[in-house]
Amino acid sequence: MDYQEYQKTAANESSGGTKQSVIIEIRAGTGGDEAGLFVRDLYRMYSKYAQSQGWGQRVLDSNQSDIGGYKEMVFELTGTGAFDHMQYESGVHRVQRIPKTEKQGRVHTSTITIAILEKPQKMDININPGDLRIDTYRSSGAGGQYVNKTESAIRITHKPSGIVVTSQTERSQLQNKENAMSILAARLLQAQQENDLSKLTAARREQIGWAKRSEKTRTYNYPQNRITDHRIEKSWHNLEDIIEGNMEPIFKAFKKWQEEQEKKVSSE
Image (cartoon, rainbow, N blue to C red; front, side, top):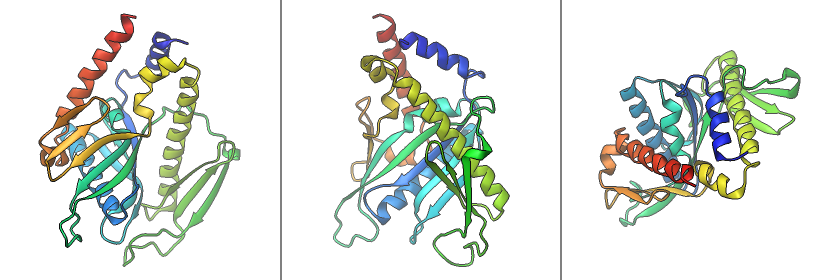
């Protein structure tokens, strides 16, 4: 399978042309509480951009930290071109800023990871109920009156793959199960696509698989009001504006970059 064949296969699998739904998983990495706050900030950034595009959104799972951040946030965006835009966000995001708790004024560096999952159509993934182990437990959080007192949180283990997903956002066990199944289906589709990708030659895989790599993807430098994307070696000096959800400059830059890469491949 060469690059052109892979593109043709991907186009056939995406029946709607522009993919309508995407599941985004944001997780705190190094940096403790500050990383959790950055998870919150980027979730807010994506949420505001989604609102500007008229996309639907819903939280599938979250794990709140003690100071208002999140250890993880999993949510779904639905709307024309949602996946096509958000696919560029996968990877390791690094933030450099002075935490509010820092009394010496020192800049700290924290990281978070973002996974972008295409939401499968019903015909894309077939999940055998017999392959699942479903457990219930009490939801956890920052405490207070909103912590669920009943075992409404859901943990689903897909036994053949070992993939484990959870959902504890809703008070309804049924809704949490539905959310967890959405996450599981998306992860299984991703695993299937990565298996297809592994069949390509190393050079072709490098050309089309850049968005899947878990390396330093983007740096948000608050003292210098600068965002730098290390994959396309481009910086923007309007960090605050972008963090408020005005992400169009980034997406336009990536669209241009992708078009240039496709021209290079087609000319070979």
